[in-house]
Length: 297
Image: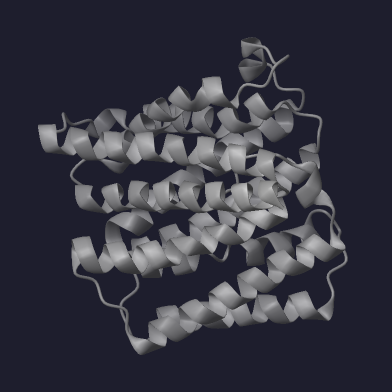
C-alpha cells in the first residue's frame, strides 16, 4: 500500500512537471520556431538518461536496439507526437489542448483491434464512441473556427497511441534505456534537419522559457519512471488526468483563459471515456504489468 501511494504521488508530481513544461511552450507564443524548440527540448531531455539507465544496461544500447524496425517507427511517431503537442499548446487554450490529447487511450483501443488483433468488448467500444462524441462537443465543427492547433492536438494523441502499441509489440525485448531514448533521437534527427531554414537566436527571456520547457519535461520523465517502478503502471496512468486541473489553473492564472460550458461537457466526456478505457485495460489485458516506461501524453 505504501508503494502504491508513493507511485501515485510521484505520478501526480510528474504530470505537474509536464503541465508546467507545456505552459512554457505557450509562454513562448511561437517566438522560437517550433522545430527548433522541439530540437532543444529533446537535447535537454538527454539530461535524464543517467536516471533512466538500469544496472546492467550499456550506453551503446542507445544506438543498438534489439528491434530496429520498431525503433525507427517509434522515432517517427515520437516526432509527430512532440510537434503536434507544440502546435497545440502554442495555438490552443491549455484545457482544450489537453482534452484533445487525452484521446490517446481511445486511440489505443482502436489500434489494439486493428494492429494487435485484440478482442474489445462492447463496453470499450461505447467508451470509444463517447470519447469521439466529446471531441465533437469540444470542437463544434461548423460552429467555430478550427486551425492547426486542433490538428496538432489530435495528431499528438494519435501518435502517442501508436507509440504505446509499438511498445506493446516490443514487450520485454527492448532495454528501458532504448525505450526512453528512441523518441529523443527521433526528435533530434527530424527537428535538427527541419529547423535549419528558420533557425533564430532566442532572447534571454525566451532562453528561460526554453529551459523551463525542456528541463521540466525531463524532470517529469524521471519522476514518472520512478512512479512506475514504485507501483504498477495501471495505478499511475490515471494520474495523467490531473493535468486538466493544472491546465485550468495555469490557463486562468498565466493566460487569462476561460472554459465555456460546452467545452467542459466535452472535456468530461473525453476524460470519462479515457478513464473507463484504462480501467478496462487493467482487467482484460496484462500489458500494464509488463511494461515499465515513460507513458505518452
